[in-house]
Length: 561
Image (cartoon, rainbow, N blue to C red; front, top):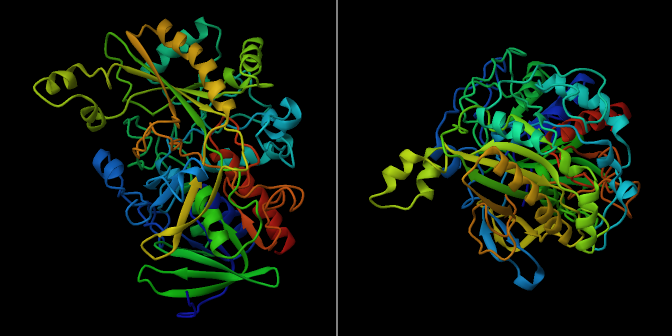
């Protein structure tokens, strides 16, 4: 694709992607005195780019708008992805929505319910602590928790995280308290946490990037219930708008929405700029002394491959979270659809114990590891209406609301081990609306994930039974062997946590970028999302990728690119 139309201003850096990672990297570079062009291929419904003190009013409590009409993007008809579980399924087995994170100004931070836990110390040295597993490409991170701790603390202050230090007995050491106290607990969480404690688990208030009190000029969460998968109508969620506001207010950052980065321009082992396609479909080039890629662990490897990067590690080891859902319904309404989507967690299933060691041995594995468990509930009225059978009894079923007002849901975000055969590459045939090859995912879970889910789900069922539900049901995402449906229960993971496709390592024989996120093939290209993660942990990646982006962008600025 030819460029050169409208060649334009030079910037010190072009940052691709305006989500939490891109916004954090942009802010760090700006604070070092750099000028930044921040490009986002999605629409801007978040912030007035000319007056960043003004946040837009485009978000609403509208299920159809957000869930069915792709308001936050991407539209799977215009920007599909493809999926297969292995090469045996041919070039692809499915075309459409594949674990899509919003394509919009603010990225994944817009739709998230804001859980922002830190990783444990063990997460940075899982191979050393637990040992290898056949078929998994485990690797320690090039640094430990102690190096990340000050960046975690800074990220919590920037975003505004509510939580309670000391409430989680398994948490890594902190240098200080959370910026805000926890918000109000959901009623359903008061029931499940009491039940969890009765069976020896250790629930605690979830660290959450939703204000519990007014913070940084934004109001406290009003617990409207439209949190996960929705933009916050009152902007009580801090990631990434807090960092984006600061970056734009500096006067050294320009935000361009509906602008697609089609290629990083590289000459003699250095990036010279980026080829961009604007909203009118006109291509142009932007020169820069550094390029920061924060497009997410699908789109980042896609862009690198479109740009001609050659490392065989690019796209490999894609990780999601293997989600285990245990749900039930109580005899009386508990209104779990009100309040923030999740107010409490427990981490016990990340910690090795005799029971998990026995389960691992029975499965022929050296160890198993689960993930944090979210104490939550059901969705909203339209989602429930689709579940109940149509006909004369539909209104009665909605009034009884066994799938919403009385539902309890526990979700374990299980550790997903990296595998070299699980990868993101370019589909050889399918193109997006611009005519550009789309990202193709080849993925199937390791038997570790299956064994861990089977073991820990039994304890989660027990927890719900102690809570007092009438029935329980267990499901997983992905669910191997199910038909491709595009919904949550299929072979396609639905976690919205995607990691690992541009692994960091000590050298090019072990990964695509160094411990500072700089590409070995072009050291002035910085990766600033969850793509560099060597392992995925059992926690959501947002706070860690923000902390990593702050650390690595500062190192880039210090080196002068």
